[in-house]
Image 1 (cartoon, one colour):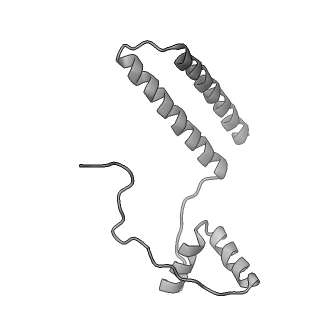
Image 2: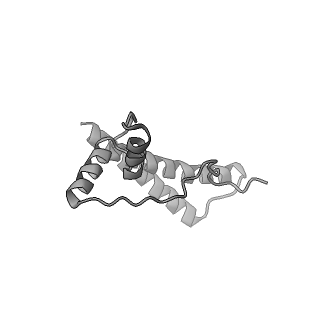
Image 3: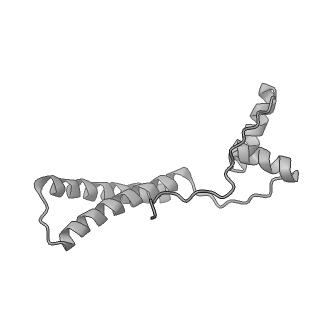
Length: 118
């Protein structure tokens, strides 16, 4: 029986490794990881295992990721409303008010996207 959720990883990283360094060394490591847009753990793992970091991730600006998250949330809410309507259930006053809030959120998101693209 599938309980849902994220599938378990085959090779879960469960071992912690502490590294002692100076404040300056820590800042350099953090900056290099941030420049590559990867975690410090991933950066140190790559350096330690292969001697170099050859990770080229396509990343999107934070604003775009936030827009995507908002769209996913709105889509989920709209899907719930559609399911109810497809069962021929009537929407109560609270659900109609929720639709108004969703519509306002969609309009605001469209405005924010246009503003970001200018």
